Length: 374
Image 1 (cartoon, rainbow, N blue to C red):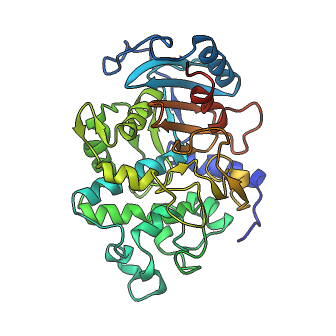
Image 2: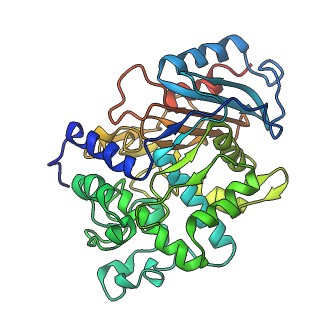
């Protein structure tokens, strides 16, 4: 792995490149009426301690959050907006986008348009007849594809590329699949080609019609690179309420208001167990709380950790339920799902390349379950 570019040098490169695709933008729109799609209850009626929930919200505010939402058993038990934001404010959710990408792959598999055990070269002809032909869609979802990774390729070069899909497809095969775990943005971007070819649809349109619209995620969209490709590794623009819908879809095993959006089988495969023995904390582009060897636990939230694939003994958050899972993005954008307590927590905030205390991440969000439940 190349560590020639440090985090301080990468930070302006990252935000500069993101501005090209409107990804550092956060619009400020007028406050809307209460969301009719969310029945609301008091924290106490939802089985949550109001005082402890207020304390968690106060931590979120001081931790540079823009919004915090807590849903229990399908009902909004509390939502807070900070620093001039409103329920309509949208922002880049950064790498939490990867969990959206995973869901789109699951929908395509449910439809029979692809199988994740197929070689990705079925839809990426440039890989046919090369060592990359061994890479399956499952490998790309698991972050153990062995595709080329370095700080230079995965950040400044990928972000500066006009056509990020072509750039990612054109990288070399660095390792055999299943041998090395790496938080590889470029490898995830190649799923844009897979989904476009497998479904025959523009991926952003597919996301809107098959995921966002069925869930009522009216403020969400997938942004594109300068060549018009949907960005799969980051770039979804969304807000707290929409992401709470997304988390609730997984809490309800792929259903939204009784409508099947993605199969329960996919929800279980993506979030119910580790996708690779190399990282107990990773499913199919979702972070898990499973015990074992955890690789790169800060890769999704801290740019400074991206070049240092530290391994620790998990789980990701000690004391939190083992079946809890998260969509995570730069600066601790998060969607937390806890099936046991039937809770979803969403926190969106400042996307610091190197988050500095005070912060609000998975450990703080998990306190809704470990401390606020009555």
